[in-house]
Length: 283
Image (cartoon, rainbow, N blue to C red):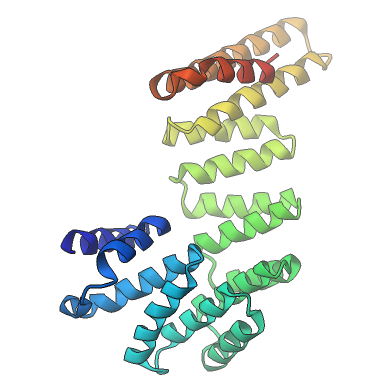
């Protein structure tokens, strides 16, 4: 039991979202144990199991955990009331969930967690434009919320609004410039906009932070290929064009070798398929 508790504690501390494994730990180890000996940590574990159960569509487990939390804290805890709203979200009772969130915001309109739940509710109902509007209002108050900027970026991408998505990605780069995924996302958006030079720059910055990012390696091949085609289609001087294409080809070859090496080390059986796929991306 102790090792299971320590693993759950580690997952909470590191915000690690292995929901299936968390439910497995609960089902096979903790569900029939007396957790009272853990003190207040018992309630953190029950909340953790509750959220993972919702992610895994295990509503019966979620309800079991919620009933214990509700019995302990009754209706005095905004946190438990919010969990109740999340439960109704998970079973598709959106109006009931909205009622709970609206009542909570009447008491405290700046409650960030509840406001984000409302936005999630709109997204679940495919009310994307309204979700975008609410998220923009939220970010006026909480400008440094990385999760919110990331969500807004995804929503704009779902609407094919690449300009606004790029703005959100730039905000994420400012907030956390050391996250390679922020660089990769911005590069991919710029690629979609046809800005291959900037996209390539940020794919390289992705690899500078995380050399194992395979998507960035593919990005370098794609951007270099498109830049080479663009160079061939211009009236620039032949010598400059040849020198530029040579540099691009060298970068493509380097990225190709890096990708092949990673597959050699992990799944060598896929090498013929990967080599064919890479060949189709290049000139």
